[in-house]
Image (tube, rainbow, N blue to C red; front, side):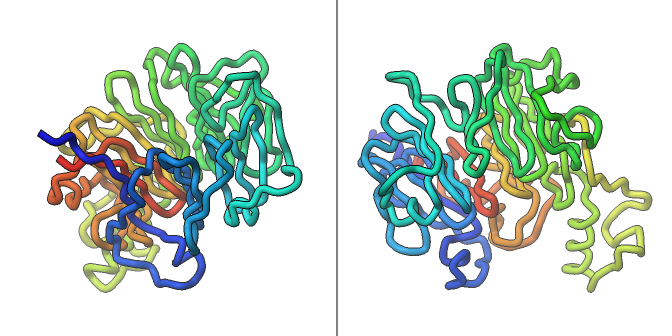
Length: 347
């Protein structure tokens, strides 16, 4: 029997849309080049790891990066690259051209033979925009996820830390206050966590037992909690619209409790398969892969990033039926700001 074929697909915002060459699509699935192993997405482009090294996928032809580049952390202003025995920050334009000439705008030497998992670096972490490096003295992290204004770290013993901007409850400390230094998320104490994710202004984590916790901003339903904006969108699509001052909305129970900010981690149950294997967060959407190989998505859907063959937002976890219909089993998921990259196996 032939081994299952592994490939990457993407839903949502494309480089052509970023360049103004295309209108938002209805959520079709697009195939990535053969041989892709990893994906690091920014808003308008992505860095791909293939069998021949790193390539940049933007609006034009794919361009290879120098062969000593092994990992990337991209943004719309710069990209941090692991290159040789250093971490370097280069302007976005140079990365898109694949021409890293002259000196980087920032660099930090790494211990010989080390290959940290970006954004983590020895004794601190990198960010793809200034300041490019922040020290974390005395704190050992296994993983780190960066949002627009905050960071979520996973400690050596499975504890979760949140720090940075907190105005949308994205730190998980029960308030909307900011934190300058890493602070343990006390609500998760006693829950051994194995993976963390950060969106624009929301966060998520997966426990060792496969439980999913979410917290932060829920404006677009990205926490899969009742969202007024999503309810209004459903009402407008189905009933001609309801004004923001006219509760209850059609299709919602009287007195529906909409949640804008969830400042403590909330346990989220999926409708059909509770055990989660992986989670990733976009700017305002969330995606998980279950242990059974299903992909669920929810949140903001304007660019088809939820993969439900449309552009509607959702404040409820929905299984991506297209994968099941095509005999595809999800293995990994990586959310860009407005799109969703999924590694699948063809049975």
